[in-house]
Length: 235
Image (spheres, rainbow, N blue to C red):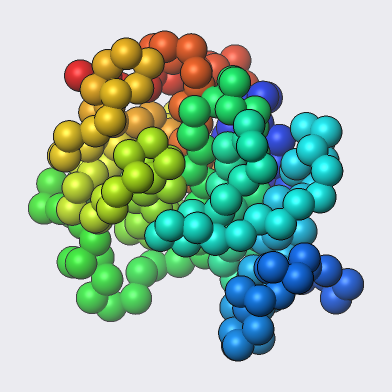
């Protein structure tokens, strides 16, 4: 599914279960030695997806360790993102010569737990969610907002190397074309010669899941996915 919302230059791998024979490098084993079983399964299968995606680019098996703020440390010349939720694991990677950053996220297509929306959504976002619920029911728009914010952070961090809070990005979801716009409310790094002020991403819902993805190409101004063009917003 994830391949439907990223450009063709991005290699993807996904699974809907945790294979029993997943192996880890010793360095990766050390990360989850004391982890509970759920965390170990998420980590291990996520790394298996990462290696499968890397293989599509001709990159051999290598440890993918969590680095600063937990961001995956990819082999030299590679950018990527890993995501997992109940019943789904995925990784997306690309050559750094073609793509500056990737952020992908997966969530169950279900309403957020009580109290979470108030913690993650700006007043304008909450108002737009009410409109979406009235005009386009059938999608858990609050969960999609959460997922888009997660994808925004994952795309932001490799470029900025600093934290981005839920309150630092204002998300507008377009229900008609499967896109979302993430306007940054903090000063961003320089990308393709201009200060980064936002991202445009894609989303989909299928089989009880919500997926979001942001891809920023190295070419200034735009990237293409599935024949459509999406802007990288610069100030």
